[in-house]
Image (cartoon, rainbow over all chains, first blue to last red; front, side, top):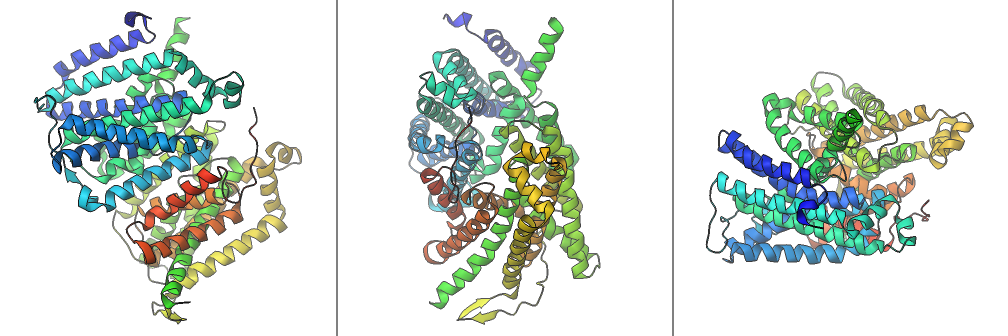
Length: 314
Length: 291
């Protein structure tokens, strides 16, 4: 398949166009900051969407992998003076190994047991990051030196904007291609019915493990970038609340939709900023919005809107 | 037995009793609806917080407690009516997110009503520790454990001896058959949320003098109660009670003998170990998937 003829090409082109035009409309660094966070969240959510939306496996602990990536980058660059890229790669390799080891037993679990298993994993990671304060600075967090790649040290929101944008486009491209490949078809078969997929000769365990590890590595890489970008991290980056936010972004935007993950990340990153206007009512409104969207748009924003749009065309 | 060990055991049983009540709440709602109610910990929080404030407003303690329980039951029923029932037939993930939304909402509600501060509640019968075999036990711990025992026995009686209780058990094991013999499933669903809210709020009131009351108190309690429910085999109420105690005691022994820093991790390490060995929970008989 030629790269210009891939499925989701229009969406990808629209995304690139948006990324090109957006800086012209962002008045100051504050808005750049929000957009960069949207980009980082989108990257994690695209990976998580492969797991939740395509393979049909929930994870309530993905922030744990994000946190490990972030802390590996932070500790190796600041305490041990490693180059940022090497630290990032090592973090991703460690997360890859950890998720690979844990994937087989954890992917055997179903439904609520899977939710509990992944949740437990995430909580344990947070507790370790909080308690090993000699390494991690404990609950107060630790500073992270700036990013550097081949001697170049990106600085400022505009430069970071382009870095995150490039990684985001690459992740979307990877995700779209993976979904259209035989792997993607196998994943959807697993989502439909594991037993049916197995009788058709799909190696269910292999694909579930593959996508679990892949989504964990993506989360770890995004975590590393996040650590260098914000310059300061706390164990909250790996926490249960963050895991929930990530899952919510995926589900809100629309499961099994790569651009849904991006839309969900955008909405849930912007919403809290808007809600700061309400001060004390922030959590109240946020919870209500979450419940309302899930009741009235069960399949998520992007698939629901796409249906509306297609329905009108007919 | 050494006094140390007894001390850890008593504190473990006290916390374990709370986990048991929360886990019981998870199980009851799961049986009626196959929903994992992530707002279960928030019922605990509401029970404690509401009592603090009704008491602070000048109501006598027993009345403040009763009001808090009533209020939480009302909120639990509202949650079922306005958040869970409209989402009937939605996927597990969607339902999980709805109840997580509800837990954020309820925490937000508590913040708006009562602020974000920590509050203490006076113990029911004084704070002079009692000496049992060399270990010191707070009278409040006895209230927690005693209250849990009374609730568990009452529930066992309710599920086995009353028509409504039996109807709940019946609709958990086969909703269609239950409906055919005339059981009102909607009512059962509402009742299960009311019961869970009641259990949660009572746990919250009993534990508040020990753990303090603040909007975030339910998060960890809820997660560990979920651990207990899963460990006991989802939908097995008595399994959840036993598992809650196991979790509480292991936690206290770990804090005492190994490391207090990793006490909160114990519940989750146990649950991972058990899930890896027995993917359907400790006390479950297993089952087959329908294609």
